Length: 255
Image (cartoon, rainbow, N blue to C red; front, side, top):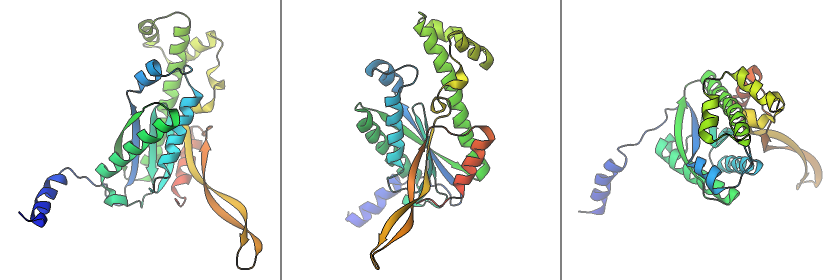
């Protein structure tokens, strides 16, 4: 069989599972650490419940993902997960989900491993969203998830620090309300509202305009130029202010 015929025959099978995100839809990619419970509890010595070295490795992973050639408007990370909002006009690889999933998962795994110095593997899923409101809802959802996880993590590890086993601490938290968990922390001398914002709301990365002095080579005169710079925000706004923040990002031009 000639190569051209064989190639055409096999491409049908190769492309059978292809899915593409329709034009006009936002693309959000969410990456999650695979087996990170074992990585963070058994293989690494980390501060509980939050570790700056781990946080910084996640930030560097997001930074790397936003510099891989895709037009990404916003990167967000909390715990061991990452969410990436693509520019609505991003059309790399014909918006094929399998291409985006494989490239982002591979890139994240490599960059995280390099940043932390210990093997970390990510999976990835693609979430198509049809309008601005759902994009805002998505990131509000992930931010609220960060808040719930942070409160639970602080309570759990404080109970562990005071002699409870893992099953006992888990059982102690079952069915407790947010107010009860806050009171529990207060009894341990911790005001949850005063904890660092990045622990409770995650970290956001986005492009900002920065003005810099430069030299015009044509006339050798100094001029002011604007450049896009990736900013890291560890104190994200809350509630409606966060909604407005995301809405405003959607209007910016992605470099």
